[in-house]
Image (tube, rainbow over all chains, first blue to last red; front, side, top):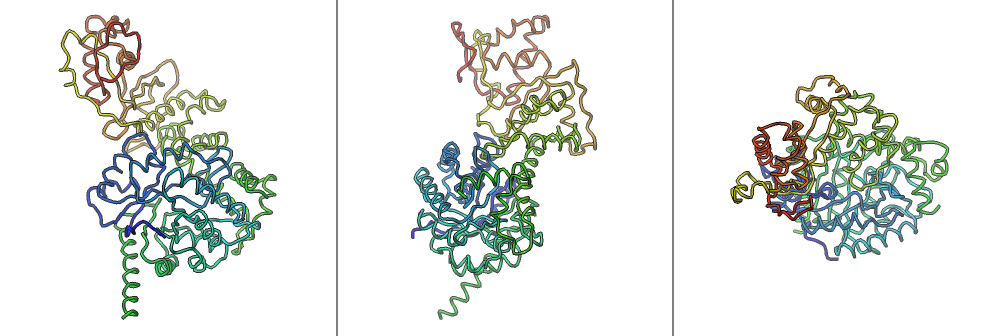
Amino acid sequence: MEKPAPLGYGLGLRPIYYEEILSSRPPIDWFEIISENYMLAGGRPLAMLERIRADYPIVMHGVSMSLASTDPLNFDYLRQLKALAERVEPAWVSDHVAWTGVHGVTLHDLLPIPYTRESLAHIVERIQRVQDFLKRRLVVENASTYVSFVDSEMSEHEFVREMAERADCLLLLDVNNVFVSSFNHGFDPVAFIDGVPAERVVQFHMAGHTDHETHRVDTHDQPVCDEVWALYEHARRRCGDVSAMIERDDNYPPLAELLDELQNMRDIDARISKERALSAA
Amino acid sequence: MKLADFQSLFQQRVLAGSGEADKPLLKKLRPSPRGAAPETLLDVYQTGYRVRLADFVAQDHPGLRAILGDEAFDALVDDYIDQCPSHDPNARWFTTGLPDFMRENARWRDDAAAVSMALFERAMVDAFDTADETPLTVQALAGFAPDDWARLAFEFDPSLTLLELVAGTIEAYGAAISEEAPANVDKPAAGEHIEYAAVWRVDHESAYRQLEPDEYVALSEARAGHAFGDICQMTAFQQAGEIAPERLAQSLSSWFEDGMIIGVRVREDDQASNTPSSA
């Protein structure tokens, strides 16, 4: 499996940090942008992106491709996405195992699907068409979900594995999403990570969530919790050298706090490398 | 249940909330292993949709919130979300329809001051991400012979919007976004009085300023491609008496200083079009 080269430790690029990034050039290896926020004619977001991408690799992450929707693929959107990719030259382009609306409506959310044979055939065909249109292999992420369905014929990780293999796409493993969904639906998050095809995973997402006791919601407004750090270590041991990053989308802390979380990733990875070196010796 | 039918049901639940219509959907949900009620879990999606859209509207309309007050503003946003589902993948385009909704909706269309503020704030948002152009300085005029000046026509930055507003809209907006915003911003009194504004983008930020009536006319005509000399001859400037050319020259200078002008050309006499080409 040919995969893009690992980029190291990255951060979701958000406007609140533009000035600090440009003035202090923090030790971040790469940035991930939300593609839709830059699909614009001009203005400050694109100008900031141009300056930042002069010094850092960029990855494009979308939230509106609606790969699982039964609406027709939105080629106006895909044309804009392709134009942005030609301008930004990202290391890769990603979106989600999700749908965002039907009948022309968009709900601005990553909505769940039953994991059925029908859903699988549907999303595989659409990923293939998107890959053909964009002329690049797509990276597809597992989403957090809050409901699951009696019609599902397979587990989520079985669905993701078969989807990736049949569509020949790459995977973005969102470790926090695995944890949130496992909590909400009662599955084993370790089994999920062990079940996805590691050779197709090119990126990890790490983020915080909100605990509502009976369920957890993927809010990206908290630090990464201990349980998710433990899962990260497991994912790292299984998937090896994969680009990893922190997503933060609300309740923004000083940039230094996010750099601390990146350092935590580095420390975990250094410990794993050391253990491997010792056991090989 | 086919995937398309499931997605229609699910979307209806998000848009309309709980009710008789979502019983078939509830039958399809697995029980939560943590004891969360199915309604609670579906509400995560419904609430998320509404909160996200309300946040976008609130970010783009601080002035509207200030003059309506929180309660009326929230009611407006609720009405808008209820009646105008989002259709664009980029939520930035959801808020742009708010002034049109207000003008067409019986509950809001008579509130001229609120509609005026919504139009002004939409122009501010639209200016933020229009296409990039490079503004000219007044030095660009040095390349033209004095004999050509009367026939000069100008091209303006695509972010420029000219607005006719309820008097007091601009002052209320300024108060609302001030770092020391008062708890209540007085709503402008809608009546016969109007004011004029230019909204555009400069140095990557939306900008605005109030225009005197004669400058509003001149800028409107200049943006329509009319030549400098033709604008001087217009009724509005003739009424101003002998100072008209001087006044217009001052306006022209400020348009350059403000970064509004991106092109200058000599308009040929036989051109009937009111759309200038690039310099």
